[in-house]
Length: 297
Image (cartoon, rainbow, N blue to C red; front, side, top):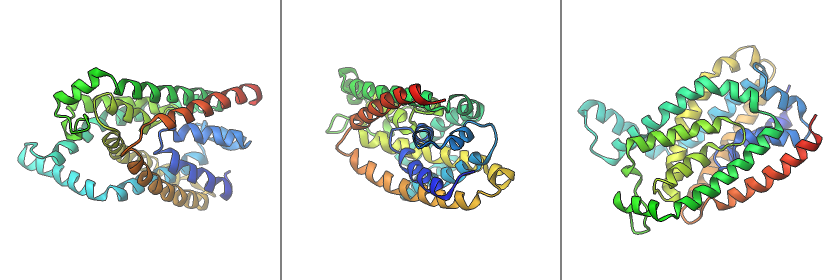
């Protein structure tokens, strides 16, 4: 089982790393491995068990924190979505953003249902998570490098760039939104960040860091929430027996830190880039790969 102390630590970690571009799933494997919590690591890669129920609470709490932070945006987006159903036209930026999110959510939702369980049970080991965290760092660095290329700047200008040379979020085409949605599939592997890879996909299409982060977080909200709701039977069934107290405590921690994380990141990306997170992933990924390769049973 999982103790209350473990639930608190993992909950705090989940809330931060789900939104920071450093992979929550990777850290949920690496950190318990470093702390010697072998039972937790083994439970994460098990096909059934208490850890599935625990993750339900963390995911729902994280999604609710995102929903609350972007509540004004979601009110406009949902209103815009229903207006398009009534008028059968897309006329405003909110209406367009609603359908961009729908298009981007579909591939991630389908692939998540098909592959999430298998990838989690196969790849959720400390060594593999550390290797993929290193790969995540490389992806972030490459994304920043491509973002500065002349072709990306030209694309942004062609789509009506702002004064800083970046295109507006509502100028994304639906096929571009679909590509960003497909990119999330790679985040099913422990070590690859959902927010990181979707931000990179937005950056290379000419978005600035702030809009790329906003689209990533808006896109993550229904996906994370749906993943939690889909697994509610694990929480309500035998998998949740004897750990519901730990689930509640861990979820409260996850929701609190997720809210703080999204507030910080939305301000951070107004002026800064993904580079610090890339360096972190490379340093931690390489060092833990070496450590687990030498010590993990």
